[in-house]
Structure formats: C-alpha cells, structure tokens
Length: 289
Image (tube, rainbow, N blue to C red; front, side):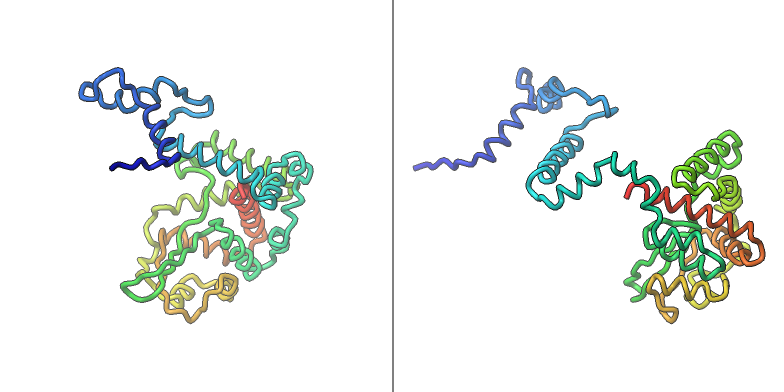
C-alpha cells in the first residue's frame, strides 16, 4: 500500500526548479545549461544592476518584496514609521532642523579639551570614527577585554591628498554640505588641511617605539590630555581602573591626534579645524540613518 503526501509548498518548489531548467539537452553534455538554461533564457538583468545571479539577487529581491508586503499591510505601526521615513517631501521641508539636536549643539559650544572629549565620546557611540577609532573586544585567552585605538575617518584615499584637483573637489563638497546644513561658519578648507596632515601619519613609524599592548593607565599617561580621557571614558561607560589592555593601531596617527587635542587651548584655529572636521564627519557618518 502506498500513500501520497500532499504538500503545496513542495509542489511549488518543484515547479520553480523545473522552470529554471532546460531539459531540451542532455545533462551530461552541458550540465550548467541543463540545470539553469530556463532561467538564463527568461531572465533579463535589471537596468539598475550590472549583473544578476539567481543564488543571491533573486533571493534578495524576494526578501525585499516580502518585507514590502509586511510594511504595507501587516504591521500598521511599522508601516507608518516606514512611510514617514520615505516621505522625502516632508524630510526636505525640515531642512537642517533635525541636526539642531543636543549633540550638534555640543559641537557648536566646544570651548576646551573636556568639551571636545565629551562630544567625541557621544559621536563614537554613533559608530562614527571621528579623529580616532575606539573598539572593545574580548580576549578569552587572557580572560580580559582589549581596547583597540586606531585611525579616525578620512574622506579621501591617502594618495589623493597629494592631488590638488581631488582636494579642491573634496573641499567644494564639504563646503556644500555645510551650506546644506545651514552652518556656513564651519571651515571646509580647514577640514581638508587637517585631514591632509593626519593622512601623512598613516603607516608612519611609531615616533617613540611605544610598547603595546598597554594598560589604560599607561595609555592615558602617554597620550596625556588633562582630564580629557576621564571625560571620554565616562561617556563610554568605561572604568579608568579597568584591567583591559590597550592596543594602538597606527601609533603615529593616534599620537598626532592627541597632540592636536593638546593644542586647542593655545591655538583657536585648531579648535575651529577640529569642530569643522567633527561636524562634517558627523553628518557624513549618519547621513544614511
């Protein structure tokens, strides 16, 4: 006695498999054509794509269509939020108003190192690597955490800072961003000059052959900036007495950044350069959010 299992989903999958095949030839002659010929014959690469693969693009397209159905009908609250985010007319009408938040106001009111380090901590919590990057990861073998401090965001490839045509275009772009956010007082030229100097430090030799990893205390002493690190670690919720090791990636770059921070109380131009840099990278780093 035999029984037949009726499963509509299995039937649908079987139909899909048969539809992508080309059974006009022999599998042993050209297996790829046999297995995929139907799909190749009936599929056109979309105008928005340079290539199209059934294994990736078709699945992604189907997933996006399913998500769209959920957003359109099944979950009203999510659907409302999604439509609000897609309302470009309303978004454009708001202009730069959404940037008039607490963090942006902190940038405008930076007066000293502590203000700067507090703003940096808040920016880093948004995963924007302004001036330097800061990551914490577990090290199971040592049963402790390791802090990685490395280079911050630069808007160009290192070699491009030596190309005036590129840097001029980059400066014009930054200037346009500052005008779009209605903050023309920020200095685009200063951003390019600051990044150019920092770019020179990438892959440079460690100026003092500093031994790494360090403890947090050793790191703070070597990169001393008054109470700046205390303020920064407080924003990130990191205890200064932590036993975590610190590994500095690109030490010359990080040293150049901390030297720059030391200078802000003596050179007002340095403060403007840093705040302009932070403003640009805060906008660029969160533009898709």
